[in-house]
Length: 63
Image (cartoon, rainbow, N blue to C red; front, side):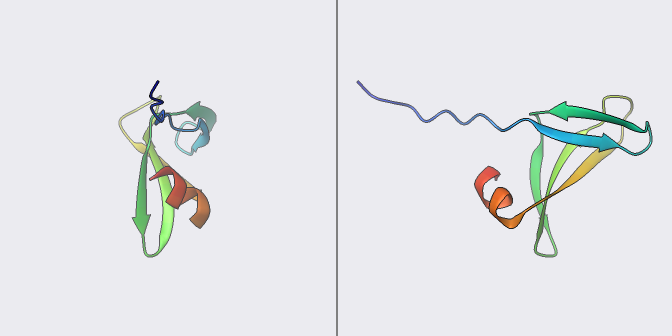
């Protein structure tokens, strides 16, 4: 019996500054910028992106 590693992303909490609302999402990209890791997702209320700072450990694990 073979076991496949599931590649499910953790659900993260984001804050939409423009809409002033908090929301959770597990659909995001991990981006590295100037040595820092960020989770980036599309806003639920518009065409803009919402960014969340990740720790280095979380950035390495989730990318």
